[in-house]
Length: 161
Image 1: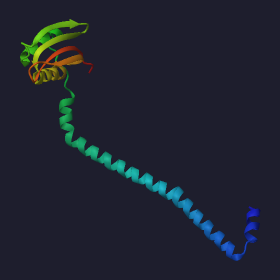
Image 2: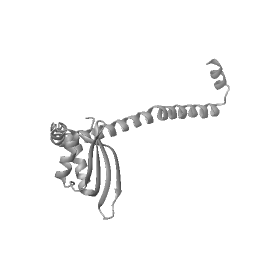
Image 3: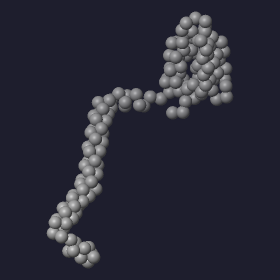
C-alpha cells in the first residue's frame, strides 16, 4: 500500500486528479455492474416467476372442480375376460362386421379388423382405454379400398394406472 501512496504522491496534481476520477469511475462501474445489475436481474426474474405462479394458481382454482371430478375415475371392472370385453365393446361400437378375429395374446388381446370405419375404430380404441383400462400395445393400420375405411391388427394390454 505504501508503494501505491508513494507512486500517487509522485504524480503531478493534474495526474492525481485524473487517477482519482478514474478510480471513482472504476468503483462506480464495479458497484453498478457487479452488484446493481445482477440484483435487478434477480428481482425481475423473481417477479416474473411470481406472476406466472399466480396465474397458474388462478387457473387451478377455476378448474379445480373439473379436475377433481375426472381425477378419480378408474377403469370399470366388468369381471369379463379381456377377450370377451374387447369383442363385446367392439360389437357395441358397430365394428362387429369388421372384426375378423379376437384372441388372447399373452396378458393381452389381439384383434384383426377388416374394412373398419376409421372414425368408429378410433372411438372404440378410446373407449377401451378410458373406460376399461385396455391400452394399445401395438397397432398396424392399412388403408382399405374405400375412403375412410381401414384394415388393422391391434394388440391390447392392461394399462398401468
